[in-house]
Image (cartoon, rainbow, N blue to C red):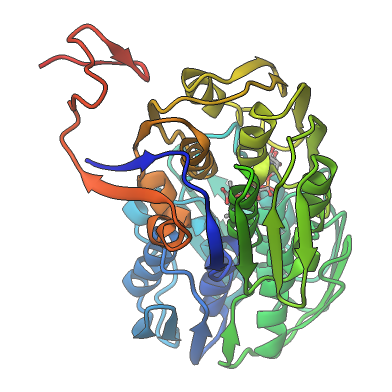
Amino acid sequence: MEKIIVSGGNILKGEIDISGMKNSAVGVLFSTILVEGKCVIENLPPINDVFTSVKILEAMGAVVSWLSKSCIEIDTTNIIPCSSPDDYAAKMRASYYVLGAELGRFGRSYSARPGGCDIGVRLIDRHIKGFEALGAVVNEEAASIKVVAPVGLSGTHIYMDDISVGATINIMLAAVKAKGNTSIDNAAREPHVVDVANFLNACGAEISGAGTDIIRIKGVEKLTGVTYAIVPDMIEAGTYMIAGALNVGNKIKVTNVIPKHLESISAKLIEMGVNVEEGDDYVTVSRIGPLKPTQVKTLPYPSFPTDMNAQICILLSLAEGTSRIVEGVWDGRFKYTEELIRMGADIKVNGRTAVINGVPKLSGSRIRACDLRAGAALVLAALAADGISEIDEIYHIKRGYDRMDEKLCAVGADVKVVDMPDIYDLHNLSDSDNFCGRQFTN
Ligand code: EPU
């Protein structure tokens, strides 16, 4: 199985170029179902969630050519409705966008229940309520969902009880070609909601207000193909900003970003005593003094992102004093703290709150990437730690980070992806050692 081996403690200096945003790329790719024609999508991150999305679309009848490693041409003219393959759909979360996009184009849709990271209960009731409000009938089965609009979709006013990124985008996809006007009140404002809306508008949709909490959609007859570039990934950028703050002496310039998207992260780093300088399309992060403790609450955009919970926790673990993270979006986002404690961190979790007492150093250890963002955060922890760390289950990281090992090595880190047997003697584990809930036996 592939693992990442990190030898910690190196001073990191240099530039890291940010790839296209995962959560926008998957939204735009599935939005192409609504287009009868060819699109060229640029700045796609070459990551496994993008490859899985493309495989789903190909299995449904889309004709795809890779023009470079980050650019595809996709012709969705001959998509066959309700043909999304169960095995791939169940591998990722964003496959739920097939439901909204197919419903918008064909008046019916089908998908296996989506997969994704184990970070808490991941319902899709708000997506379903939105489809029903537009006139669809939803049939939920244990492993799949079927949606049909017997007399077509009609625009309506939809108020979302709570903010959901996925439901906002899915309702937008279904409503783009509905009869009349739709409004989504209490909509998510994340940059990827805006990016998907911008893509659809470039294809001929009439969506206004994306990025605010009321999105208005005037139904149109037809969407046509365009060339479109995905925005930079704010979470990948935030992850490498944390890398710049790990050790005194580090200085990382994170390039190809939209600094506005990073404001909540920059503000927290500055509060912790980190230097953050913003340019037009870059931020530079460095540290000369100790890290100060602080309070973080994760909430929907523009607040501090839940997808940065684990990464900021690495810094808070090394701060001088007691910090707190309150997770405001997911109910199971702190699983990674068990791994961090294994590295010497002092963290107590109670429900959605983690209290972190800073320690002077972390120690290299054998740890598990419990989910995508936790995996990336544990790589950061390993970079700051003394000694060697071995990170297992890195397929999570590969779902969402483009060449994390190469990007970090280019700024001076010692990070290697290796293919090793599961039973490996790096830290002289004995036969009875229990690691991450697994018993190691020969
Ligand atoms: N929720 C419901 N019902 C729904 C939808 C959501 O109760 O119908 C709840 C969820 O259980 C959660 C909260 O609402 O507690 C927010 O969920 P949301 O729908 O906003 O999340 P999502 O669309 O499933 C996207 C990202 C996640 C990111 C969240 C929040 C994609 C593919 N995923 O998920 O990204 O954490 O928004 O910003 O866009 C990641 O990239 O690592 C990741 C997990």
